[in-house]
Length: 108
Image 1 (cartoon, rainbow, N blue to C red):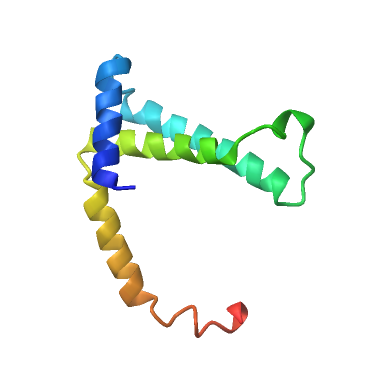
Image 2 (tube, helix red, strand yellow):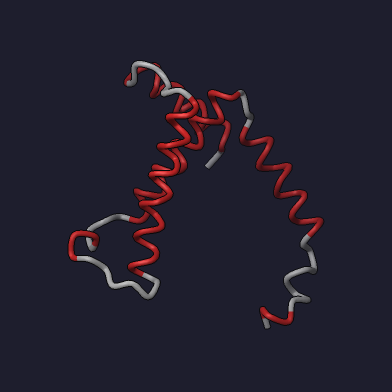
C-alpha cells in the first residue's frame, strides 16, 4: 500500500461520500474506539480471555482497516505526509535497531 495514494483515496472518499471530516478530537476518539475493537479481538482470540460467541464472527482485518482509515483521516486533517513520515521512521528504526534485537538475550 502506498500511503500517499491511500491518503488521497480517503480524501476523495470523504469528498464524494462523506459530508466532511469529523474534527480532529472526534477522529481521535474514533481511533481509540477502533483500536479498542482490535484489542478485544486479539485478547479474546489469541490471549487468555475466552471469546464470546458474539465476537467469533468479527473480522480482525476489517477492524485493522478501520484503524488505518482513521489514521489516514487524521494525517489528512493535520497536513501530515504519512508516506514521508513512515519512510523517515523506517530509516530511523533501521539505523537505530540494526543489531539491537539480535543482541537481545530475551529474544533468543
